[in-house]
Length: 123
Image 1 (cartoon, rainbow, N blue to C red):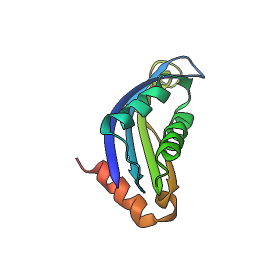
Image 2: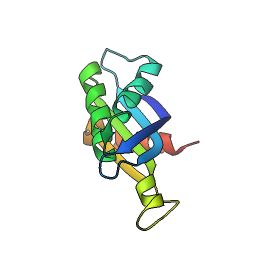
Image 3: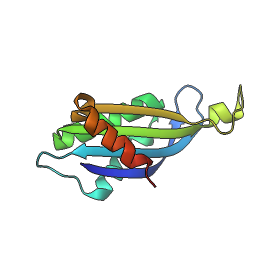
């Protein structure tokens, strides 16, 4: 299992045209092809620079890594603060939205999924 965690990201919500800022945690289980460490962060940046919602961003990152590496499994968790929640409406300053996508072995194996989730929480 290869994990890159705490990848900072900045994106723009397509619903409110306001930024959301957070971090991505990405893991994959190589079956031959591996990505350079910086390539994982570049994939996050590539999709984060687009106008979208966080749910789609999470899926796009996971699908791109799966497509490029043909990994046995890919997992992506994004935690972000949304300016639309902080500035408008309910004005909650400390709320964090978390989204996740688990593909392949991470979806099928609860042990792999738990290992990933445990490792991204250990600091």
